[in-house]
Length: 203
Image (cartoon, rainbow, N blue to C red; front, side, top):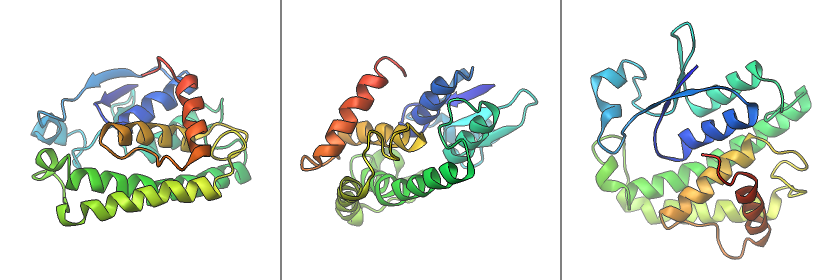
C-alpha cells in the first residue's frame, strides 16, 4: 500500500496507526505548503485535495482518516485500535466522534482563521472573525475531556485506541500553533506525557 503523506496532524495519525499495526505503507510526499495538493495531478487522486490518502495494490484509493483507520483495522486486526468486539468498537467510536466534534474541528477552524489564514484562505472556507471563538471552543473541549474522559490510563480506559492517537496528534499540533492543552487539565497533561514517551521517535 502507498500513503500520500504530508505535514499535519491527520497524516501523522495514519502513520502512527499503521506503525502500531505493523502495516507497511510506502510514502509519497505531497507538498501542501506549495499547494501541490491543489494541482490537477493530485486532485485526480483525491478531489477534495486533502491528505492523507492510501492507495491499495489494485490502484483504488481511500481518503479521510476515519475510513483509512477503519480499513487498516479490518486488514490488520491486532492490536485492536478500534475494538476487538462490537461493544469495544462502539465505545471507541463514541469517544472518537466526541474528540472530532469538540476538539479537532474547532481547533482546526481556529488555526485556519488566524495563524493559518494566509495559507488556507484560497483553499478552504476560513472564518477569521470567528477564529478566537473556535479556539475557545477547543479549549473548552479539552476541559470537557479532562472532566469526563475515563482516564484509567488511556482516553477510553485501559486500552490504547485510535482516540489516543488522534488526540496526541492534535495536542502536539495545537502546541505548535498556539493552542496547547489548557494548563488546568492536569490529568490530560499526564496522559500527554505518557503518550509522548510511548511514541518517541515514531513519525
